[in-house]
Image: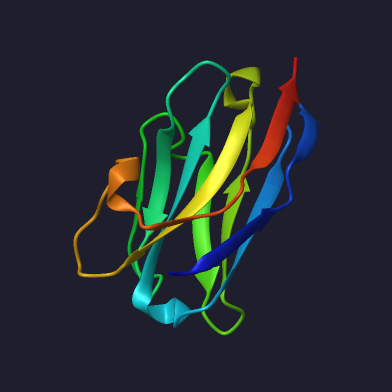
Length: 125
């Protein structure tokens, strides 16, 4: 298992930006694809995007495409979620997740074996 710790959440006004970080430990980070999910109150966990183990391939949900960017620094065992042009509908707890990279892309939570504790993002109107 990979241990994951998110940080960087907070309160931001609509139109603003935040960058979330997810620090990994416990396994060889560069073997794992990483993903971000969000969960709003009363709703199911929702896919945001994923990045493969090398960082050379990303895939995003339509709702965030063009606004959010996932990147990773394998030397720092960290994955990032840069969120721009935030709107109140982006308010949620954001989770990072890890999956041993076999070359397949998963957009459902069931595909991921390790999860962080989440970080709250609140966007005010």
